[in-house]
Length: 97
Picture 1 (cartoon, rainbow, N blue to C red):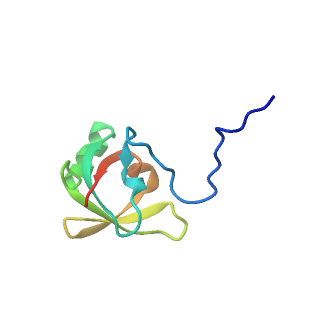
Picture 2: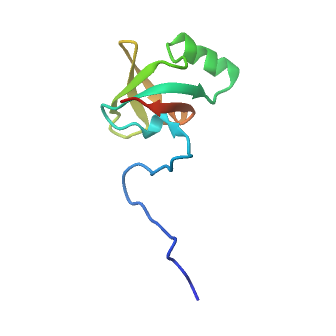
């Protein structure tokens, strides 16, 4: 017998994360702010991101997404920067109140 009581299909929206799961920059919604905790990136790329202001402890606000959704614009220390979704998925945050 097939038991689908644990199956869940999300047709839209962002995936829900449990309390023990990492929150990534991609989880922010438009207008939300998070505090950068960690960069899960190769050294060279992480160094470039730090040079652009993405250092642990920094507040980052999600401004808006591109029409196709592959990029987002984020505000860091008063500067807006466009980042690819693959890159923001490697930046761990904690939500800021």
